[in-house]
Image (cartoon, rainbow, N blue to C red; front, side, top):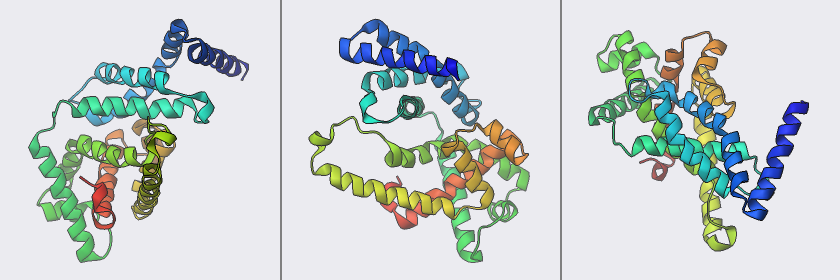
Length: 259
């Protein structure tokens, strides 16, 4: 506890030096002190991009997000730096991934087919279809359907991030500069937040738990796997299914939020 308190006090002094005195050395020390946060976030995302990007690629992509967070953070606004920086770092990594247009069109097409299959079965059955039912609808063995979910996992991660960015994003504009637009923006934010919560509440229990543990409790897929007593790849599949359901929910209830 003493060590943590000492580190917190040290960072507080560095923030004061950087902000009040424009001290470049303090800025550099703050960046270096939080590189571990970039590594942690990159590690949480790496499972979704296996076969596409190495861990080092994701860490490199997240560093500019950390630098941006250090430059934009204001301690007097009340938010913890780690919370603010996490959003910036995660956003930087996913923006870097998006910039390559690396996903084949066929993968997007497969994701849409799965999403539409789940939606149609839910309508026909009046309940959430199980994996065997979705696989059968798509004409696939259950094991092959599982591989399909893993293949489209990166697409669904980016899709949910688009929604979460709208829900939790920090604005770089001042409240005064935004003026009346801030009121409209806040109303839209609250509506989106409520719909996201409602959509999550309608997910099957295991998928709800995966979304909650990953996004709100900060667990990695490996850690969630230990909680559920399943493999990391199985958690990835559950995450993918949850996101596809959430996208379908938003298409019905808040279509303007879904691209």
